Image (cartoon, rainbow, N blue to C red; front, side, top):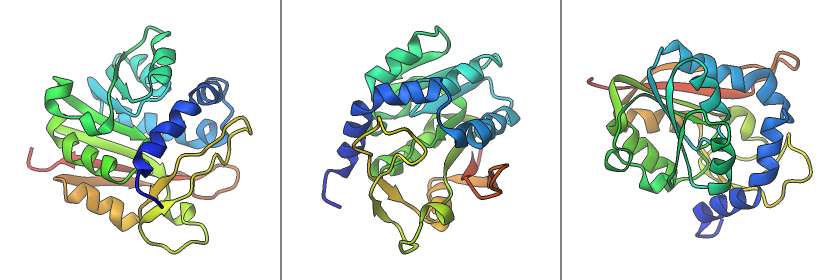
Length: 226
């Protein structure tokens, strides 16, 4: 795909902010309701964190959910319209920030858990997130990532890293201009953790209760040497 794909991702989310807010708040995405929402919430709560950084928080549903458990949550996203929607509920804290700007200096706080829930779509931007996350975690902290399972998401294409055309599969037809995304094999995801000082302590594979098919994969990486 042509150069500039990272910006295409951001442009797409700007254009689709309104339908995404509605889809999430009205429960239009079946896989989230049946599988993935519970998977990420349960994994975070298992850590018993006091503070959480939600990277790519979107319209803030995970921030709201975790705040109800007494957790101090900061949600960051690059799309102001999504954050405006998130802020209306007066739960959690929100900050506009691009992935490329994430750093310990920019955040001015350390966290027990950093989480990305289906929010890692790019190549260089994602690599930057992995490089910076260990610097914003407390001792014993963890980075939790839920993403499409590579075995399922690969489809009929070759099983190797590379840019893919986007899709709004599972969403209604109001969405348009789907964001491209960078496909990674399971081995590549594991390498991202290991090469950035994050020891993988858990890999879970949530399954849809109706279809009994793989839906996603959840990684938990702890800061090595802390």
